[in-house]
Amino acid sequence: MRPRPAHLLAVLLMGASPAAAFETCVAGLERDARARGVPAAVVEAAFAGVERDERVLQFSTAQPEFVTPIWDYLAFLVDDERIEDGRRMLTEHRDLLARIEASFGVDRHVVLAIWGVESDYGRITGSFFIPHALSTLVCAGTRRQDFWRGELMAALQLVARGDVALDDLRGSWAGAFGQTQFIPSSYARLAVDFDGDGRRDLVRSIPDALASTANYLQRAGWQTGRPWMIEVKVPANYTGPQGRRDKVSLDTWSRRGVVRADGAAIGGAAQAGLLLPAGPSGPGFLVFANFDAIFSYNHAESYALAIAHLADRIAGYPALRTPWPTDDPGLSRAERRLLQERLLAAGIDIGTVDGRIGPVTRAGIREAEARFGLPVTGRPGRRILDALGG
Image 1 (tube, one colour):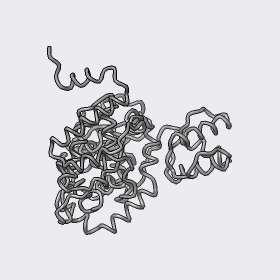
Image 2 (cartoon, one colour):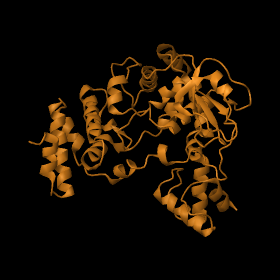
Image 3 (cartoon, helix red, strand yellow):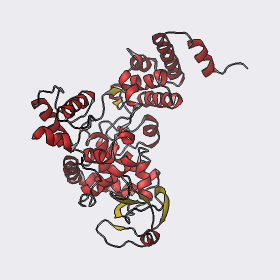
Image 4 (cartoon, helix red, strand yellow):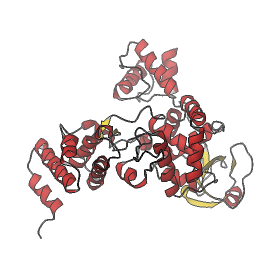
């Protein structure tokens, strides 16, 4: 059988050096972009100096939403700093958020929570140059190459249409960019020009970014005025049904012994699923259709829990009532910075104090754990923070 074009390319690259294979693949991406109407000057600038990026490949195999303990994940994303900043943004952008809520029906606190988690309210949007990161995923990755190719072409077409400047294509290793981290295909499909300047600019325009996020959630099935999540308790050693998709009425959950986290009864016909991310002894959550809309933004339940809880905290609701079932809780960003300061004070060089726990800081934590006779994990937790402060 005659090989199809994709198979033919693989045959041609067999036996080529990794560098030569990468260059050949990138040349194919350049031809594809020009064929899709991207101007030659944009193509040339986008691929100039592109090289295989090992950091991109490393990040693609270990996404934090799926490998980080839930108490670490939420301690970092829903900390006092992000809550207070969110409440300040709620006041600063009151009129804008009211207009967005009126236009799309999406609760302003959830929009703010996504902004806060995705870019720390516009402060940190990512430093990867999207065309180079996506070229690495297409030409050196091991999975989803067709998806990454599509996102790369969508990014370049955004530039060609004038929505975004090429140099503004800077974001995450996976191609998400802007104030609320849209991937290029979602940008092309769902971004809106809310400030009325004729461009859909999710990088520099806060109105465009927040309104586009609300549009995304509305299109994902957001139900105006309905809840997204409530914290609950389940009976000890609960073994009944659970899962985001297994939704039944609140009356049914009540019959199964589920109560609000403060002990109050629940009831009604509203449909919800039960999440127990740390088992029946930890916090439980009844999640509604609006939680599913949040989940669609980044397909990880831990992410959706972080957004939902941060939205609640920005709105003035209390912290989780049930503690996580661990004797070594996670650390906030301020506590992570303190941990790094204490590592340095202990003579362990971890570089800059920035609250980010990368390979160098994890190596420093392991050194400190070994010094104090603790299990060597490299994890930033309360136990090693307290040991270093003793």
